[in-house]
Amino acid sequence: MSEKVKVEISKEVYEKAVKLAEEAGFPSVEALIEFLIEEASESTEGEEISKEDEEKIKERLRDLGYI
Image (cartoon, rainbow, N blue to C red):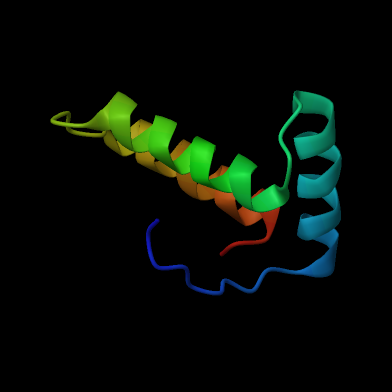
C-alpha cells in the first residue's frame, strides 16, 4: 500500500465530497479523490492542456474551494 498524506480542505467542500462519494458508491471521500485524480492523470497523460482547458480547470478548483 502507498504511503498516505494528509490534505486539508474546507468543511463545506468536504461535505460536498461526502455526498458525492455516497451517491457514487465510494466507501470514503479519500477513495473518491484518489479515483478522480487517477482518472484525470490518465486522461491527460502525454497530452498538452490548452489554455482554455487550463482556465476551466482553475475555475472549477476555485468553485470547489481548492484555490
